[in-house]
Length: 291
Image 1 (cartoon, rainbow, N blue to C red):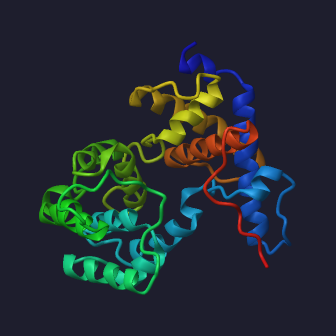
Image 2: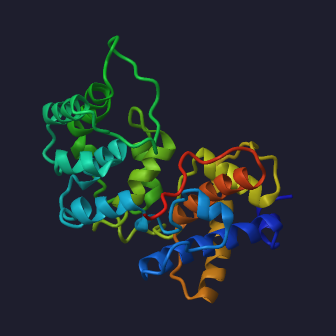
Image 3: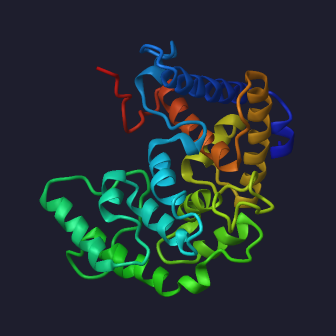
């Protein structure tokens, strides 16, 4: 069965995905409206933490948007700040660093060292980076500064998304940089797509880059073996089909449409939900109930 054929049917997997997406956003709306806990009768969604359907509503993305992306939207090196933001991905640290343009590796390293000395968390565990190369005993902040961020800053004139007409083109450019890969480049693109340089990209609504969870999620939706590999171009066709079908359901609910990266997030979170439902494992974090 091809992706197109499978997506032409309302499979059990899609029905569960759509129900998950609708109920997860209803939880957000109920909580935002001040409704009392619990905000759902679904035992899995009540017990475990899942990202929002709309990536822009997640806490870290909200912080990045309000503190860095909007105030500095016209900065030609906003893309670099988004790289720093996602490799750190922890708002208390980002707030202490301050907007990192112009770049200072010394400030970055000092800030991380000071937070460690104070026993404070410096990074989130959302995005993994490869095993650290380099000198024995090298700390993560030293690795990021020396191997990842300094080279990006040195090549900033080449890496600014000026004159690039699609998100896919910019994603492919970033993917070639050391320690990025497709998924991390996709996360940066999902942030920078709102800036003036890319907000008119031809594929603004449709582009997304897969990650392990969203590949498993699409397999679950289509009834394929959960770890079946995907060619990226074929996965994107499937992701776009899922996006269209979720948006059909969202229109009936009166919700705003999702874009490609939102659909990718939904597939990743759906994979987490199915692992719980099927007794295959548990997400990393339980939902923090209000006191």
